[in-house]
Image: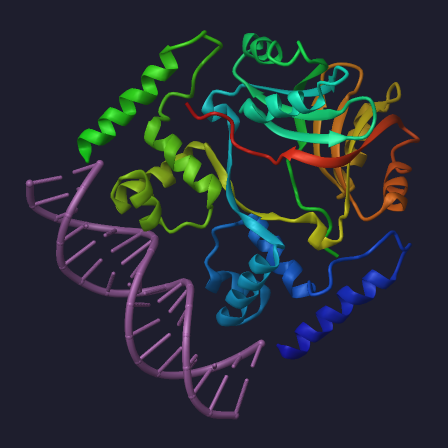
Length: 173
Length: 173
DNA sequence: CTTGAAAGGGGGCGCGC
DNA sequence: GCGCGCCCCCTTTCAAG
């Protein structure tokens, strides 16, 4: 078993050497076992440590210590539940790009933060200063929420029809 | 304790009646206690059932049964871990809007699904058919990934500078 | 990193209320 | 919906290799 682990680790590291160099492969201190651990936790965040240990081929104490280390390092920021927004009455999702009017940037950002229907917001380069995701109950609800920012910003709204990719982990290699 | 619960529930329900009617408030079968339970699990997805029970003022068996019911109903879709992408070497995030060329829509969607750096993707109304989030190691990496879709689609890219709102729950009321 | 043992706590189940 | 008792498993900590 020990041999298998070492072989697997070697495989992972050698992959990082292959291909184009497109930037730092991963933070030092995150090894192949850590990445396996993260992948398992991503698919089942409530898995028991003992079960997790079996999946990644380690003992339970070592697994628990790795989890603690990843949490204190800030690699693991927390654990959460994935909720279907429709179950909460949010039958509509919109992606809204927000361009604050001159001098209104900070006020717009504060307003967005305070409106809980904005469930995601990134400040980006380019003309569209903010790109946001909204959870909404209806078109009327969308109109109501947007009216709170249109005094200070131009918005352009796209209604979500389907979601081909739900938030997922990037490659861990 | 029972009285307190009932009072709290009354508070929640009355809130739903106030204000404009902007659509269905929530799926039937999701009550105020369920919403509290969801809020706690959202902030700590690995909390012990016994501890969760204390927080929402129920007994452990009742709490466990609610969790099971919410999972089988599909309200709770799963549990996961929140990982800092920088810890995995992804020091760059981009929001990319993708407009497939005529006749290329399905091929573009398939291509996006297969590229794991696309960690989020929504198909939306309007000219920008897809709005996607990418995790990247460098600008060179961004260029490399985008070159895989630019044969079949026009793209417009915005680099994420900051994230004012990390994915959060909408109002549960 | 491993195994093994011991102590404490939590989870699941079934009961009666 | 609650509380109780039961049993098992899990977690944690320690030792020693």
